[in-house]
Length: 112
Image 1: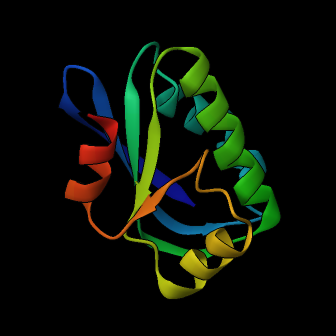
Image 2: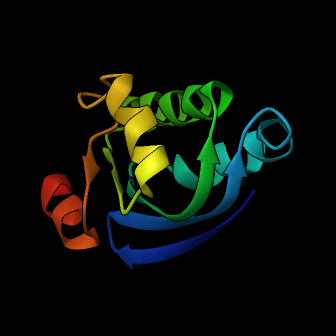
């Protein structure tokens, strides 16, 4: 998995995810991903359009990052998940911690 961080305003970043977030990739991206997403006091929208697969370890990483962001005064929202990834997230009932939206605009509106 790889990711890119795009500053989208004074208080938020967009993180674009690509590839698979699973047991083979979580270990290699956990520290840099957490540092990038959990920048002090900044909210984040995670662009899931390029994420092909999400395992339970990937969900754990997303939850962990969301908790850190929340403790630092920010919020996290996801958008654009492919059907399989959206189904996994929906089945886990994580909406309170990792709300999932169809578009970037909807995710940004949630952060406002």
